[in-house]
Image (cartoon, rainbow, N blue to C red; front, side):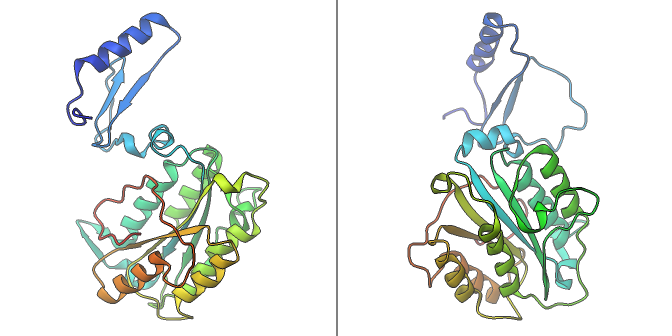
Length: 268
């Protein structure tokens, strides 16, 4: 714990000893919460300037071993075309990168769903595949499924309307938990909705009321994480109330490894 930025020689010595004891060990990885990585044996990598070990599924498996059900909710209203404050990146580009980071850290036993919204809410419809589960059911985070979902995220476009209907977005997100085939051990799965936007709701009912009603149907097992791109004060207040689930009884906060860079974040 004292060497998160500067790993000691003991780490590489241990790796060498592991290899000497078992020649079938091809690669060994050491990573820290500071993003430092040691790989044995040493190798030359190309185009690795953006590599961060914390975005790998192996790191996430160690940092958060509990299986998760995650629904990403992404605002695609016209305001997401605006500059993010990061050179040459709109708000939408930042959100796509963040969503991709979340998906690629999921383990195969995790499940994932995706909702995009402006005045309407949409879930993925992928005619190029034989899978219909993306539209209505949580999909296991296998490589095939995560590749499809990441591709879908990068094809999302901002709409022509500035309206954001949180009610429809939340109903679509909660529907994943209602409609998925739950033959799994749900008592031991973390269930979360990650809600990403740049402004407050302009259409529909009070989102806090929607969360209260829908979560009650699921014994208040769903935790809400809200992320604000920008510094809209009204949106900050609304999103904080959503994350706190002020009207819910028995709501909870959980910790999962998310690394959203270059955004103003409000989370609970």
